[in-house]
Length: 165
Image (cartoon, rainbow, N blue to C red; front, side, top):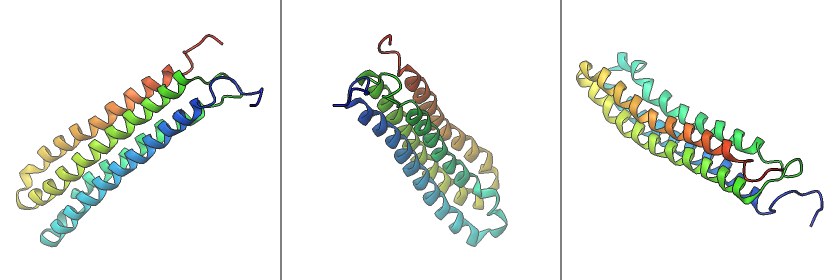
């Protein structure tokens, strides 16, 4: 055991697991949303090629989900430095829960964006008046991931408050 280590030795495992979970789950949501809505765009493009650029919105919104996970992963990983400051299990659990909250919210939002994007762009090709409704549903689906990002930032900021060093 090194004498320069401050805190619990297993705590960084949970912190890094939280960072990985945030990035992996958010990117899984982004990939699913991109793939599912991309299939809809390709299918719709056969019928109405002039609407392809207008129908890229769900693909872009799904791509943003990966950025949310990246933000939390960077915040968590920069907060783990047990040699400089004590890093205890409370801190590891705070970072783990932060990553899980952001990652799973991003995964759920990506699934919603993919399903709505696929059906929405196909329906928009047949009835252009549905575009605004599709965009509103996509915004509410994206908000789910934003809620996870906000909760992740709040939980991550709790790390370091476990003990007065």
